[in-house]
Image (cartoon, rainbow, N blue to C red; front, side, top):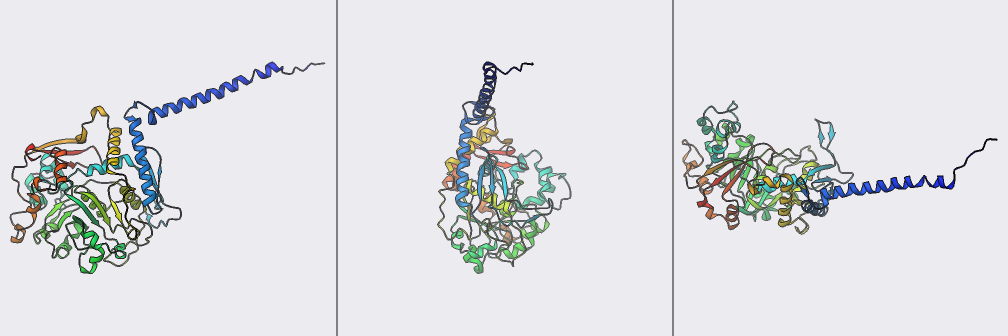
Length: 475
């Protein structure tokens, strides 16, 4: 008879310790991984440019932005992925009617944003010059022969073969130095053209701002006064609007025109007929969903103003047609990405949104991160982006440097064949404005920047600036 051996109690129990050891090893390994992750993101010390303190600062800032969106987003919610990444989501059932023909899809209901990059970009704009000037073209290595040519529509060449050729086309829109300064105004209203303005009576509130910025052909008259106000200080226009500007500007010789894209013969002809100052916008190319003249107006305002209030942008949910307050309804789109981005900007402290859906309640801005919190988060984001050993402080993004003596006289914008009304225009009001006459906050800002003007070079890069230092006598 064959005897079958059964495992002894000793042999059976001897199999258990390896299983226990495996479980213990897995637990220890998980703990080890957790410790490594903690040292990278929440623990002590540094790994590369990442420090515990900076990640904690940015995580806290993300939480504040998230709460702000919950309070102000009217249905939008913000979802934190990590210390820099935030996803903005529309509620389920949002009507996405805008069709992207290129990708053959309707606009999605969620968008991911790099908050660290966004805060670096927009805080940089607070110190930048956004009007093209002679000093910029003089300092930039390819300023007159290459860059200037790109701003003239009819030149028909990639570059100017001599400086005089570009000067001839740009003289009427080219101040010697920046005519507008950071923090020159305390409050600015940027007024869009949305038909939703007719549902409000924001007119007096808009006019109470230190400066008002409008877009293109938007009419300003008694008919629309209670909705959009009557004050007019700046108007950002595309080149196609040149033929309408003489009529649009009738009765407003002080309103400054700023051309968004290129200057061309039609603009130069129009300029000679009006006393209004006219300049070229020197912003950067921003590749994002919120585009157009309205966004450029926000960029312009932020470079001059402490507080930027926007009206008539239709950035809150609930509308189904794109309209202008002065035109008939058109079959339009539902720009969800633009709305999400504007809401993010509000909770980054860049703008304050006013709309029909908010006009009936008291505007309380306490849920927007404070300037101190934004400044701290900006510093942390900057340290994450750059190695501290190479950090040059507020001028770390300057790639090209130049020096200018502000006491040197420069020609005021214009050309020798200007009419009499043109020669007596309001250019002098801005172009020979001494720093000493600016409001205290603007003077303090000028001193803190050591008299340096910041200009963007090209594209969407954060670390590509032309920086021009003015003599210390003016600081």
